[in-house]
Image 1 (spheres, rainbow, N blue to C red):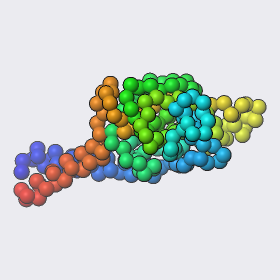
Image 2: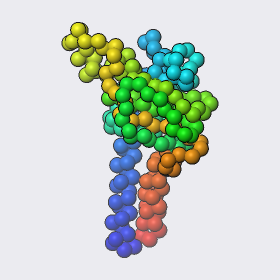
Image 3: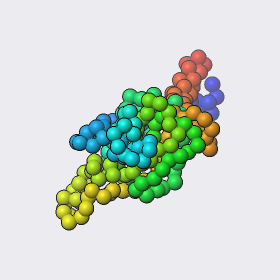
Image 4: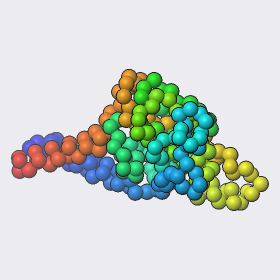
Length: 205
């Protein structure tokens, strides 16, 4: 085995370990709340017809608070919710406190991130559009915002504390702007590369 091959194999193994460690950290750092909770239900924030009434929200929904890293990956969502994620597409265009998602394809899952709170909802049947708001950022305050609200009782904390920074669609069918890399690939590709390098190294030893 050449020195270059040995160096590359070692580098791949190191990256694999670091990648796995980062995934483990992301999957265990933060608080996930399953809705309904504390008198709040998912249809208050995600609604198929814009009424935000019972029966129009997702079948399963989760509030994820104070996650580190704050950019929550598909692997972390799958780990925290127990859902299978086959693919995803992220829209980085920031928005306000309310909006209408109509991406031009069918999707089963939807994430909306606003500040340190992230709302994730899954529908048993794929949908094509969805109304959303960020009131969950005041209904489920993170520790910093809770301290601020307690120190400023004159402020209306029921108003959304944060605007949407980006959204993610999960388990997509139909044409999309860019073909997303399957979520599972990010989990298994580095490990496979590392194992291939390790096996080659053992065979040549």
